[in-house]
Image (cartoon, rainbow, N blue to C red; front, side, top):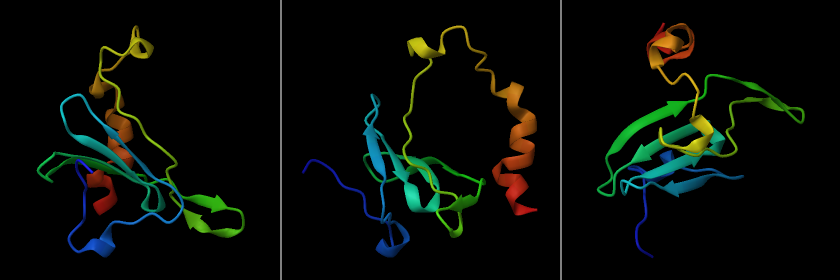
Length: 106
């Protein structure tokens, strides 16, 4: 094993169904914690660089609503699938105002 991540306290990081990780070119790791609808990037030293928690809840097979995320990938701006796309974050200010971290505090 080359590297592992453990939360402190350990029980705060868990997915019973699925989840995943992706080693990024900069050495960081992108982790999908499916059960909590959380995606975060962490450095080799264990510092969380950023995280996203899905605000979108829906039913799943008769269970209580949840915000599960199956899998996530991080693509750099040089990724061919992004060519010709508008990547300016200012174009999505409305989205962040409604669903971003500050909106969730209200």
